[in-house]
Length: 421
Image (cartoon, rainbow, N blue to C red; front, side, top):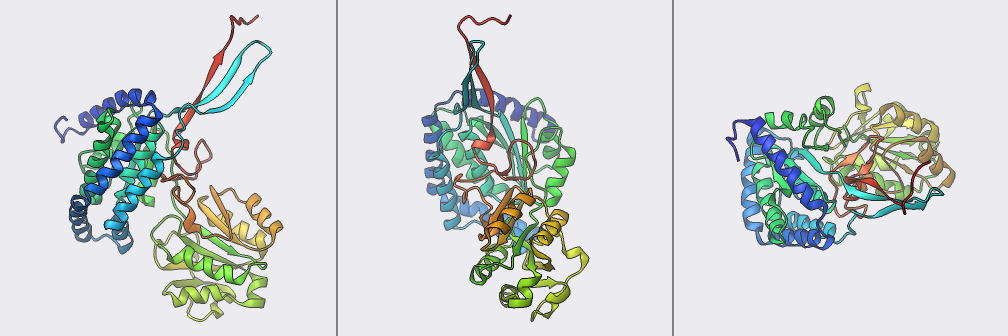
């Protein structure tokens, strides 16, 4: 590696290495990739003490830097979380290999037989903040899809990411694949991020995973295509036809299970008819759990709530805070979400199939749920083993981005001497 102070040269070398590795991965057998990931999982489990020691350094750095409790929670590793990372790696390994899958196949009267098949994107760049598990999730998913990846972790997770990356590389090289298949930017210098966003000769897509500041920067400055979501402003609408027991269970989980993730509920919408007939005991549950429920209008009658300001709607709190608002039926909920949502994940709680269908048709969020916590907005929970992020754009990938979403496709066309008149 070149002088680490020469950021353009460092990044150019990473890019060239990734391009070469991508060529090897594109033709690697499914079994070879599976074996690499399983070997990486075993290496992580064997290195738990070293990974914990590295994480201790990062936690100290994060506390000195003044990270919020939510950010420190994202950064922290313990033995259970590390074993969970290894389990996620094995889950990705156990999935069907997407590369070469025939998506569609047909014959034409002109004598052509045409297949549309999945093919790797090439080189993926992932820029993320304090979650060291992203190092493994992103590396595994990219490898499964036949892509090389350049990882730029946050300065807070520098040591943890390095320790996990070393285990992943150990697994990759043990089966004869190039170590450069998964590369970690070896510097905390922020100039490396700016350089990645301009590497159109080497990187095919950028995936930012972090807060609004990071994702907004990437979306504004990137010359490379981006899979991303800016914010997770997730709504839960409790309809007049809701089962109250389900509503209480789902609302509490959607907000409080983990407040610092993008799938955490940030606004509870309550149907006026429901509130007039049954109140809002699910909001009382949130108050009892220590949540600052910021409500407006008649919801101020709920014991323990505080007054909502206009700025509380359309806000990603990532904390024990939630907004709450009365709406006039499902149409009122749809209108509110269209105005304040971020096209990430929105939920309806109702026993009415027609109302649920209207909610699903009326919104274009990447994930829409019924009678289920928004905290399920996660690739692992969707059966993808892991995810590289959530995409809310309209092109290519939407929702959790797993191995399949990290592929493109190409057409394989065969004839028997066919010529065009």
